[in-house]
Image (tube, rainbow, N blue to C red):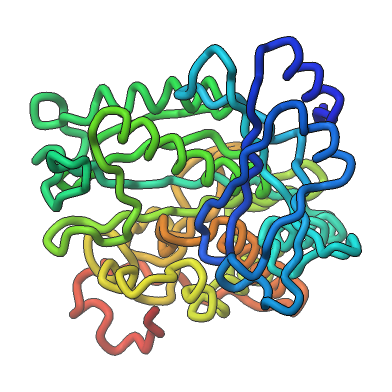
Length: 380
């Protein structure tokens, strides 16, 4: 059951909440926020909060600069790293023009429109994201260095893994803020880590990715460590991905369970994602640094799919039941999750609407250049 504005106002009064951070995302995936005294929340819910859209890159020009934030009460959560006396809550916001019309640069609103399109086609979608990040030491002024926190590798344990306690604190904070961490571990790169959360609806998962990055940075900073979500922060170490796992349901049935016929709904969905993958990459991999990651350390280079195979752009994991899904392995943590998830979903829906037929799987190790020769595959 969704929480209402009155639910949040009651919580604020009963739990010594003094400030509310109203948060949104610019088109590049950067979080922005404005803080209000809790006493201003009734007006914020009723009238919105006006701000200068021309000061946000890609939003508005100076001549028509006003935009309005509308807090979503269902996203309210206490920030556990802030003081327990005079608590701080945070809510994600949607954005409109002053006349109430939706603002086209509201990426959260774009994702909501794609979700409605899927529902109109009788589809329900769940999304889970696997977000990798690096931890770096800081200098005497607290600025990040290029020195990774440790020299550990995949699934290593202490003393090689020095991030165990930080991951533990992050998981506790995640749980306290309403996310459901599934597992955490050291990743392949020196100082590289991964924490995975349970899947949810597309909008909730995009909100959760933004929340996750905020939590990781806050907990790391409190520990005197710098957290980096760059796709390839170290040239000789593995890149960081944001794998998007997506399942589709129609009439209660998981369409990715069992065999996937090339002309089935699931097959057409995958075909649409593959057909649009090069355009998608502009948004799922938005930095020049993103392209240093492709083609090595389990990051795909070619437009192809297969089962289990981690060298593919789209992978179907060998799992059962509700865990059956497709995994898009190209996105990285620098992306705007609202745009990334929304555009991947839109590409798949386009495949269904145009009855695209899924190509044959490529059951080869495409990290070996010789294996890709002569196949005529497009690259990212």
